[in-house]
Image 1: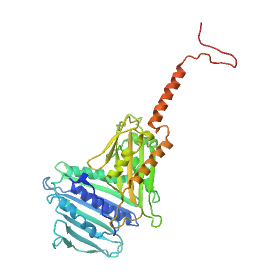
Image 2 (image 1 turned 90 degrees about the horizontal axis):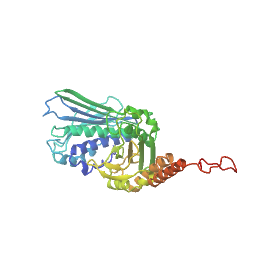
Image 3 (image 1 turned 135 degrees about the horizontal axis):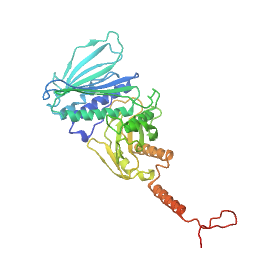
Image 4 (image 1 turned 45 degrees about the horizontal axis):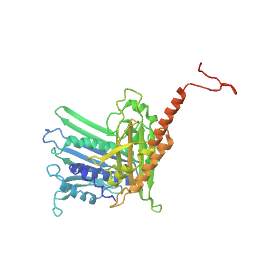
Length: 421
């Protein structure tokens, strides 16, 4: 299987190497699914054994039904193994994989903490034959000790998978299972990819899928588990702007593509809605169908856009600890503004290559989405100058209407007045 090196998750998560590890494993699983010609399922499972809280390890499984994997891709985790304290992760991966044309299911054990010359580094386990069954897939299992910040890790993982749902990638069903057992009983989380919007067909474009996913994200007030029923009743009032840019090589049908979707939600008239005007936006940024920290160049594009000309007043912005871009608004007139940026390669991902978001493509796609909003909803997205001019005209018209009607002709050639002398 030809898979690319996963994007580095950057310094923002340097204190959480096990997050980087899961990011890499999920990235590869997604790419294997993208290369498959059949519908695929990606499942992330997390289980804390019902042992004492102090000794219970966190067992993690990332499985997919995409094309089979190559063992070489896991060797790139050496750096992560060195970054992760051995008391958190011992470097062991249990890998089960098979290709569509393989006659057997192969099992391996990698210990990345071992030296490359050590015989204990790689062990081939028992092979299971498929008995003429035709299928493919990979499962990677590992254990994290309880020394890791498990609660924060699970919270991050739930948010990470929810963002994957936003893309609604074609031919892919994604799900997350979290099972925790403690003295108070079981606490389980089960997330599956569903939508209250029209279920996209196999021919639905990636842009329309992103629109559908971001609408659901906005109507759930962002990355939360409980949706707002009041907002879902007003889903048709959402204002959508889309933009795309690419430098595709027409001969090879490959190249960089950037897609941007902006969703604007009005404040709900239903008093049961608990969302007030949100003065900031966390930009959802994706590369090759996976949430990914935004690059400095793309962040600079966001900050340099002339937002005022599109009816927004940007107060400022920053990159948070997880590498997300956060935009802060002034005099916000909407309930919330959600923005998603996805950059990826057309066609299958090649060995050693990944999407490099080019700032001019991001700028072009973002401006196209903003222009679309302004054209389709001119009354809501006047420039700041236009808003001031419109307000001045409104007050001028109101003043004229309130003046006494002196000398207004009621019939041609005759002047009347409402004043008495």
